[in-house]
Length: 237
Image (tube, rainbow, N blue to C red):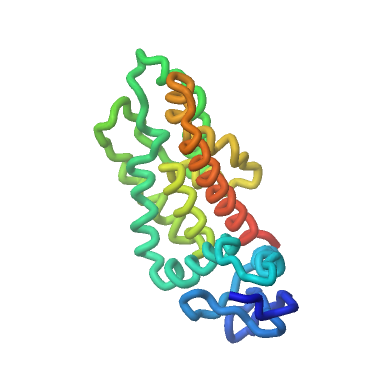
């Protein structure tokens, strides 16, 4: 598709649409989501990020460059109308959280997991007031019922954009704990991503790295980082 606009701007949304929200305009016309809804976002910073994707397009529009827009549209079209369904998809990442499933204590991998994963897990427990069950092996053992209830209550308070970002990060990291840690203001995306891929890195150290797997990991990290950025821009004043 050829580029059909010249000017890209942002503007506060009409009060009737979403008080306090922001929109992107193409030649003065407001954008809609892929699902046909008004694309209203909660902060000017996020609107500017969306606008930059439109402004960066050349004479031919490349849909692959709309990575922020895709996540925003998902939040508006899929998450906002069905919040409980979104929670039901997100919470299982805590039940099978990578950081809770470890090698046997006599294995060398266990020491690495303890060094890298335990600080992240204990910090999350302290911050959220929950307790996660640690397991050696792959046999599932449930977290305390109070933990599940607390996580549900916390996530239920989140806006659709943060929930969409959390779902993307949790699925990429196989860990809700890592996704939640990525929301912190001082979060180090690279450090969290290395933690999520600890076992993969362990195998690389033993057997060497596959080029295709490395490229796939880079692409997955870019998606993780994007979701973290969308969540941060959502909270921006």
